[in-house]
Length: 286
Image 1 (cartoon, rainbow, N blue to C red):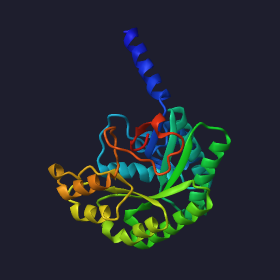
Image 2 (cartoon, one colour):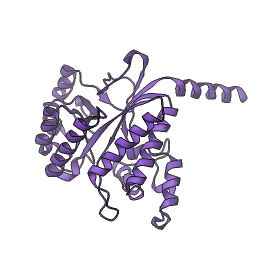
Image 3 (tube, one colour):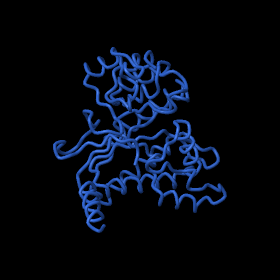
Image 4 (cartoon, one colour):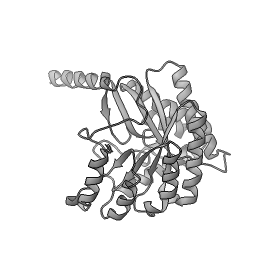
């Protein structure tokens, strides 16, 4: 009845107004329906439908299906103009949800047809952050530049260089490097030189690891760096195909895990203001 609806509305309002920290937001995974609508209107020739661009609440999709959704969204976002709109919309919507500190992560992309380069891609995301700041939005935003593990060590090295350049030239907007991408492709150990280079130049490391079973060797190598934060780490524990040695490393270094849950320690890579004021949300996109 009406009482239940009222209580639900009160709960929604309570959670929306609660000051929050969001530390695991992939830019292209945080695009809302309304922003997708605007992108689709710009590119009707692509014939993309809503069910191709969204994973609805409660809907189950395989890991591969999730990456297919990202591919479609990438088709819709192929110019600096698209990136600027998407990034500003995402930041505004997180601010409306009560997020006070947001770390976005995104893989630099290029499009030869539109002339968008990886450098201009990152520059545009930073411009979106600046514009939102200048507009007085009550949210602090930082950026992690992502290395897609599928693209190999040469691309990873170039991405680290890009991240380092922006870290040094943007007044602290770029704070770290993220390792992500399809965990079933390639071996994270191949990227160790790039990850170590990033750490050595002062970038914080957030590494997706143990997202699928039977990656103990890879996870050992990545945890030895060690990372400043772990993405997911779903299969670290021996009971789910990981190893006690992995758990021990995480515990020893007190490395925070970013998951869709609230019961792990957290540490922002550049948390401003008073951390005691915030509730941590270590989600995976909106």
